[in-house]
Image 1: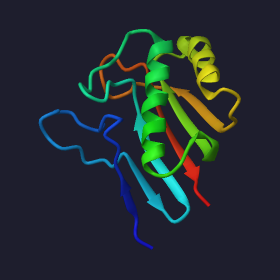
Image 2: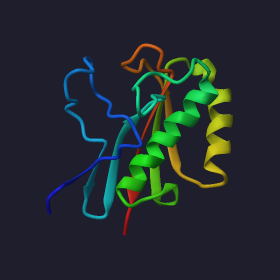
Image 3: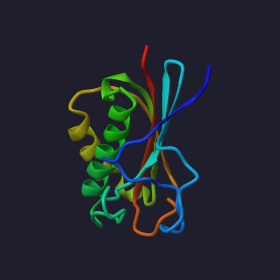
Length: 134
């Protein structure tokens, strides 16, 4: 079964170090009944710049970008089975988690949240996910 590349113009393309060159990453790949969404961050889809320094606003934009890619792949948050979160500063966890809870509006997923250093300056949160389409 071939993999199917998924692209949304409502979310920024990530994975670049030089915005003038194309990214080597797919926003998502569908393989059978599974959709694998690349890590999304708090970037404005048009400018590809970080939207805010505030972790709650970054979390919301990251999830908006993630849901845009899910939609392009024919999925929604209700089909997400797993999310992985990377926080630049684990002290941001309470504010991140509150913004995450508000955005999810009761939807349940499995999730791992770790501390690390997202690749882009100013990015405080990155989230990827896997959705089941069957």
